[in-house]
Image (cartoon, rainbow, N blue to C red):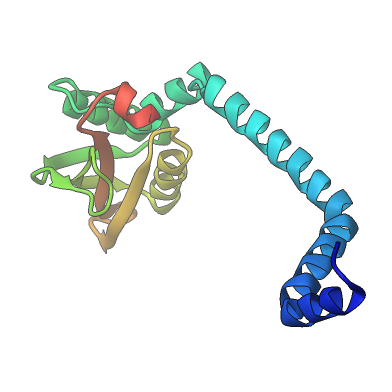
Length: 179
């Protein structure tokens, strides 16, 4: 056995190591409840992450149908459908639809799969008829933007309104729009 003096000398030589072991041990005992809570929280987060991976979000069919009406897919029938809509609105509001000319399709900056077409449209009617036309155009479910409107006097009481109406088209199908 070692003498008391030898133990004191050994303790003094390794004092820093003994002190570190005592401090770390007491810190671990004090922090143990918090460490256990962190472990339980980590497990809960892992379970939630797994649930998120298991349950993929499915597109809502109603939202997809509304998207299709608001921004239709580019097709050969689309210009005719747009012109029919304009003609219907003109008849409903008492305006006469004149010339309508489409500009070339332009990609929408920062929106892959979308394009816009500006249509130059001429309407003739009285002030309140033209106003009702613009109100009816704004009420359409389809996404349209009047980017220019010029009104000039024709033969009194008729006015001529030249509009540039921007309409948007999807250049890719519903699957890419839903993602």
